[in-house]
Length: 194
Length: 260
Image (cartoon, rainbow over all chains, first blue to last red; front, side, top):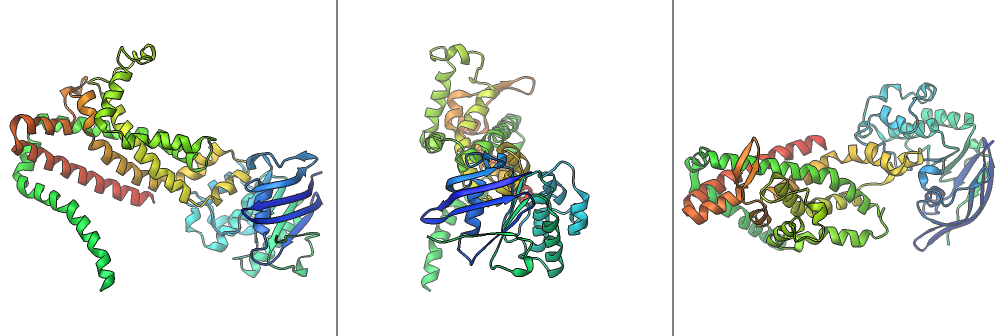
């Protein structure tokens, strides 16, 4: 059973600082990080990935991961920008996550028809769905979703909500505002300035 | 009106580049170019030069692309010093490059016990080495700038999915970069083709059995004809070489556009 523990965790981006944050999330827990533009939502996620300077502790299942490189943290990241890897077919993008493509996720997000198209041939919404499919297909223990619902139609948003709801791993998503409709996000972490 | 003043340096610079080219073609004429191509000595010199330049450019792409990526992503702790070191050949006169390479592989070299197995003097290897030496800094500099400008979000995405840096480079970065690799290779090829200073010292004539026997690189061949027979043959060979270079540049430009 996966357990994410963040203690006194602060992320630094030049003179900007997010934190300190304390959070404990058990397997299957969905965390929403919400706040206005510039409040540091993405900064926090990048800090968890090890891209920005951090202090404090970040552990999964008791293993301290704050000094590990991004590829060994087992934290999958869906970036906020709705772009899929250009020049690679969707099939190849998904294989970055797993050699075996999970047909259930493909069907659930209805991206079967996109598999042979390249990343630069996709619309913003389609690229978002491909990013989400990849992170859910991977073997990461924690999934970070940066503004996962932006650029999606209402129908697709519902599909993504459903995917998150069914996910048994820890999911941390960001959004502009707290939205009570999404009460499947059981824990909240608030980013702060200064 | 004031805006138009800004375009004057552009037209002036274009004129500095284009006018000598036009005069060269005008004075040699079609017949002069055809006469150059009817000279077997020139044709094989051109063939040797292109072969060596393509080999040097391929070496640039194979070695220079990962080097530029490592520098752009600061994978080395001494990245800044390494970059300065790699760019230093730009400021070294090319005759000096020729001398440096010559003595490195000569019996007076302190590392001759290693270099004695390789002979750059009047060999195809020496020609490729000299061309690589002078074109690699240009390739690395241009590719490093490209990688620095590249949005790193796709790399981060791939690495967060568990792919290490090398896999991400091979599977994500390279496919995205083919167009730029082609475009920068084109510049690097042009630099290799135009090399003269180091080649005249290191590879005055090259033997590469069974293809070439005592063949000079094209730039050396043109210089030799100018020194020995005067302006007219040098003019013809220069315009013929320029024409081929321009056609090749155009061809590679279209290939890089397609790759992009």
